[in-house]
Length: 186
Image 1: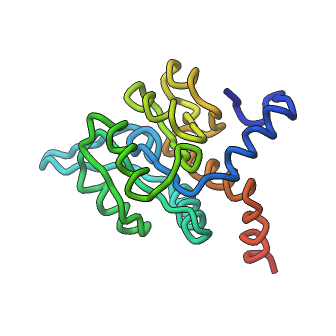
Image 2: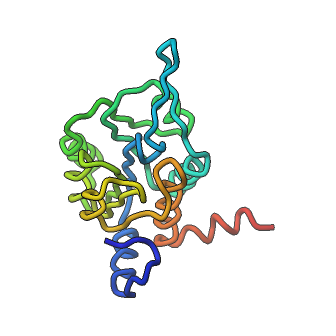
Image 3: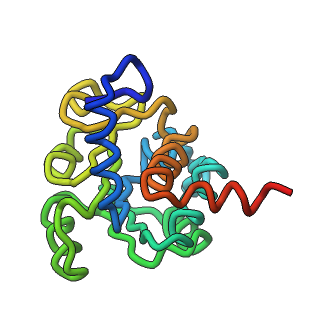
């Protein structure tokens, strides 16, 4: 496991780089990855979640550069549907208790291999998928057990830039980040 930039050998860094070059699909858990994991429910029973705008921009950039994004979450929420629509994410799996079976179905439906998938998770229910994904990532504030079985641990916590961090890393590994930066520089 590698926590970005903390005295990691060049060999480990190169292995991660090679894994990220093969990514064609990014699958994200939602609560604790795209959000800080907090769920606010008002008196009327309406649910509110906080999403990070930079994470959203990272998702848009990675999708613009040919890597699709899928949401795979254990909870079911209208808020997630709205956020996915806002970002242009067309495949969303909610209320999933067996994430591995859905993960396998996604691979089959898209004719992809494990090595083509990056998965970002934060809790023990994500472990079976993390163990199979070509590039497995835990957010900085993930459960300790989860951190022990991933390729990379983000600097940023869930809902606070972790998704953006992963998107940038993949885009950099695939030599696409420079084009993005150039687009915004004058």
